[in-house]
Image 1 (cartoon, rainbow, N blue to C red):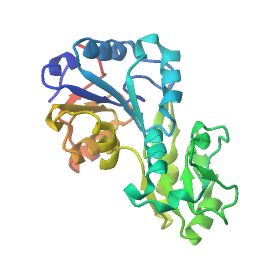
Image 2 (cartoon, rainbow, N blue to C red):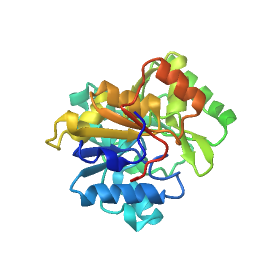
Image 3 (cartoon, rainbow, N blue to C red):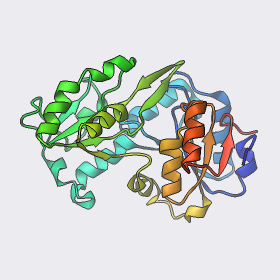
Length: 273
């Protein structure tokens, strides 16, 4: 069902899980109409959670949002990076006992905020690592080969891999960047075992909703990626709103819809009306 604005759905839902990249901003600038929409939802007494596949703690994301616009201040934020922090504290809950051992960070940014979180043990040697932590991202597709040698070594050692951003790509202004999910996909294709932390995994949705006493039929998931946002909503029994003018191109949309990744609603851009 095509809608013109989120105002058409306000009376039907009490909690809105809203993606960030491609919905609220483009990685550099916020979308003014989207900011207007979430503030309207909040003023109407609705719960709004920014729900993002970004491998960063929520404090880091909050600073970035406020830097874009004060209109994006004081919203609840749940990130895949925050979920990774939680699993580090509770590895047995997710059958991930190896998280108490040393990780080899696959990253081209040694100052990445996820590398400083509590309980994370890091080694600079792939030979002493118990698992891979993939947080790399690159601007050029050709650069996806930059870690091939390390990935091959990790496969030989049968190391499990944690990917706290299942997205393959993300928007950065007018550009598309290749994110951690692209490297995790390469590792999987080499025969490696990948544990994804973020959309579309059901446990990430449960993590976001556990403290909210709201029946799932009153929750709407909003996103611009059919493979993560819409697939995840479908798998978690949630209604969804697909934002067309996001990261997915038209060919991807047609292909994914043909295999059953169908949203409840579709909108061109996330806006009030």
